[in-house]
Image (cartoon, rainbow, N blue to C red):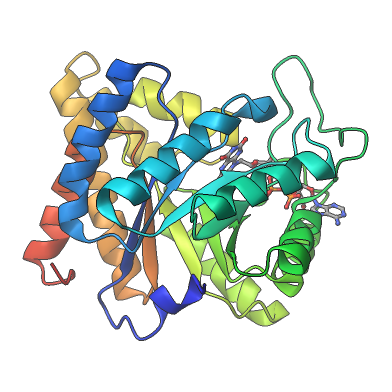
Length: 296
Ligand SMILES: Cc1cc2nc3c(=O)[nH]c(=O)nc-3n(C[C@H](O)[C@H](O)[C@H](O)COP(=O)(O)OP(=O)(O)OC[C@H]3O[C@@H](n4cnc5c(N)ncnc54)[C@H](O)[C@@H]3O)c2cc1C
């Protein structure tokens, strides 16, 4: 099933998708579904769920995407990584996902598990995400495939050009769309999109948006994933460092401006890292809706 089709002919109404992570407890799961139900009002094209380090959330990831599909009949994508997995483990997961009628796979290498500073392929496993894309394409061709892209270049990459060549390898192997790492300066995204275009990456490039909840939170996340936090954004948070509602509002306003500008620059879609919450994303999408940018 094609995931790219969601991004065709969208005009200035981008295709929306949301990313969840597997909750650790039943209480967390119930809360997550409550938030998701609010988010479904915005008619997302698909919902994704992350896959934890070392395959630690393997069963949970499949459980969440399967349950989302069963409950709401909305297309779902499971993230899948190479960490600590043999090729047969990957095949087993893909076969189980197929049985559960998962529609798409977000094919990733994954980060090294905690305690390890660099990625190592498991014995009998794969080394890079492009190899996983090829495996899916060859053996499970009914899955549409998304991959990760890095507007500010992947942290371990030898150079921006090498990183782009590696992204092209994933697309050439069969990835239908690229979802980007979160970023806060749209100029980084526009430059990245142009460079993708120049190298012949001609699939939809979907910006990943993380509505920040506080300076503390966004500093931690950007440090982990190597994205830049613009100074003016940080300064706004610092106007009222101890006021939680101010912090959240700064995050909402920043993301609302960011996505409005992205839409003006013709992005085909928006992928929200909602972190199992709905308040900020709902506020951002309401503001887009009031500007006539959403078909809800
Ligand atoms: C949208 C999105 C979703 C994510 N979801 C998850 C998740 O669910 N679980 C999780 O653990 N992590 C997730 N991540 C994080 C991701 O796993 C890390 O960023 C990881 O470090 C790289 O994964 P990748 O798939 O981009 O790797 P790759 O594309 O394999 O690239 C990894 C590095 O190797 C280089 N490289 C790639 N191919 C080659 C090659 N053939 N030869 C030489 N060098 C090469 C690349 O330039 C890059 O520096 C996500 C990231 C994004 C953007």
